[in-house]
Image (cartoon, rainbow, N blue to C red; front, side):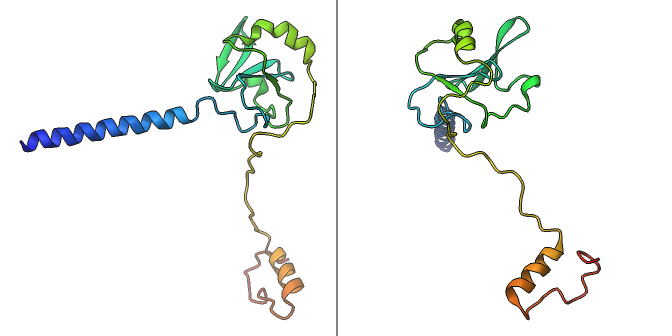
Length: 165
């Protein structure tokens, strides 16, 4: 009887865990990328004129022509690894629903040429900020302390020549 109870509890935990995993997977499907233009409720594809590629919002994949065929990947090809997705213009294809937006590539390429910029865009989410406020130059502290604290200069102690000349 004890073995049956343990088996039932184990099965329950297994099902609960699988259900939780399913929920977390489905949450991000179809979510626009942070660099995508804000203000669009329904969209499936962006066309990126500067690199003549598409982005499939639902699949979170780039679509570009390479090696004689259209390729779907989660990353841009090597030649565009430094392309600024936040700064580059994105054409939201609101009139196309299907799996092959490149069917109209010739039309998109002419209408939205390299360097094309339509209405101003702001990203769906702000550009991430990398780095940190690292103060290795102790002279900044000294300058700040003298400027803002007058007689309370805490840098009068010997700092073993760190930040002083």
